[in-house]
Image (cartoon, rainbow, N blue to C red; front, side, top):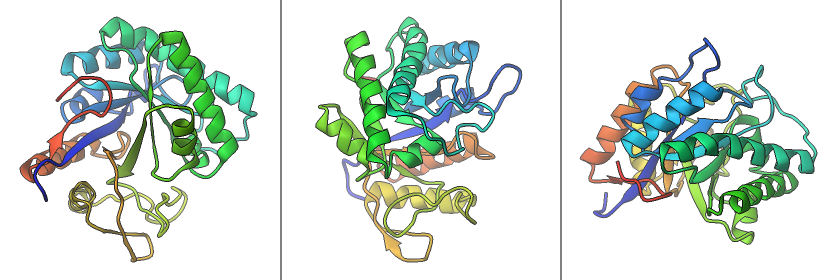
Length: 264
């Protein structure tokens, strides 16, 4: 791996609700440089959002709004058809809710990432992607801050965000299987999630170094991205994120958030 390689390590945090706890937020914050914080539509609640924002700020971790369809019962992973005007308003609403706690903690929200079914939808649906971007623009106007958009390389989401003048950030997944064309294998399919810790670390190093990984069908695929995700709800996610972080640093990779001025 060449010297000077820089990558962001992100994970989904704050996805519990009420007395139900899902992600080990404190442990994950020891490893990641960016935190995708649930905003209440697929997970998260005001107390959780506030706690995660406060601890992320204390750790120097960038705070991002992880927006989703309004689907708490389905954890935001059920396909939905939401009219564009409703979706843009719901995206802005979620960012605004998190912004209160993120600003109180210090840095404020610095980027936006869709979650679950919405992430998959805006990877191929231009109308839904445009609605998400419109919601981000509403939040930008309200906060007076330029928010980056994190998404799949080559997706309509990033195309729409770039056309709107927003900063776009490409993302890759160390713990998810890819199709040969660079999209994610749907979770309903067999082996959509990579569960072997050694394989996840190997894929993380390959992605950071710009070398090919194996797609779902065994073909070779090169994924170039500025940010690398380890899912927070994967069993053993905290230990896995720590292993990935350690391996990247040992390989000479600099871990640095893509948004804001935080370093970790």
